[in-house]
Length: 467
Image 1: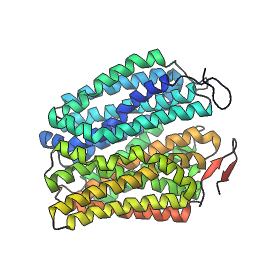
Image 2: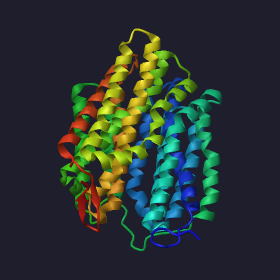
Image 3: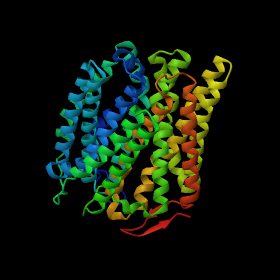
Image 4: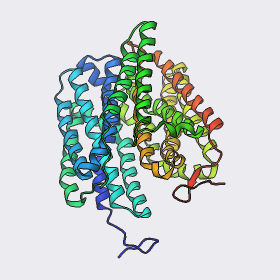
């Protein structure tokens, strides 16, 4: 019988494996679909804005559903919520595969995002309930993290291969066997859990946040003229302010603005959004850039993008040691500087006279932004949890996901607006320059606002800094 450090029986990791299998799909679909976007755009006659909506529909729906998914999972059962999300995700995948126009595909992608929110929320809550011991919970979450990393890393190459050999619709149909396996294994391996004290569902907050993000994304992608652009941004800001005000008045907010009273938390929020724009949103436009610049096929683009995604699988364990050795301030400022340099290398590649040198520089640039993002991305989750009171840890985790997904959606829209409707090769230089500028600004905020050493907990409320 296996015992942990506290001489307690170690629970089986099979439930964590089953939960991770379902979570694999929600991460795989992000990077796998990205590489097929140019092909989808050609067949369905989508412009740059249409391609952006294929990703933003998923991300915005995920963000909105997350606001209520936790409460529903606690009330009706976490396993039930996860299985329901898995079913919705499978049905939406079929709808994506059968879509004959951009609107239908966008709506189906939004439905996928709703299913993914329940899968992730239910899965994380199940792990929290099934593994109350710190050591076992860490191993279970590590399993979830590794599987998610594999999904993100292999998404472009597998998505490119599937799209190139079978067609882009099979990227969505490939979800079905894994959804079926999750539906069969989770009821057998994972017991049902729920909280006795249920939270009220915040439909008003979900509506306000969704409206703010949708108005902002629509303004950036579709509105012409300075006055209309400003008016759209002001309306989005007002809706976001109403959401903040509404959250302040709730007894159990999903997004408590008070946590941003700490200037270090402001820096972390800026870093989360910078990584979303400077890495994740850049990934969305890389297949179009590679195809336009070099004429590469979908499969070739997917294989080349491994340079940007593989670091997310192999670098995080190194980052976990570096953040303790260097401290937050140096670690995050260096990581964002690396990302800025990577985006500038893309610009340099566009200026290179030799196609061979261009190709080599682009591969280097992808590896560099992947390295910087892999150093920063996983450690930011721990930073958010460390900076809030212990009894707000669950909310802090939700805030992290909301900021990442919202930042991803906004980043896609901003870069799409900068790229314009033509998608010409030289227009991509402005995309990479903007990404480099955002990463540089976030790196400076880390230097100015973060404490030099990471904050760690020694008790329910007590915090200290690691020297």
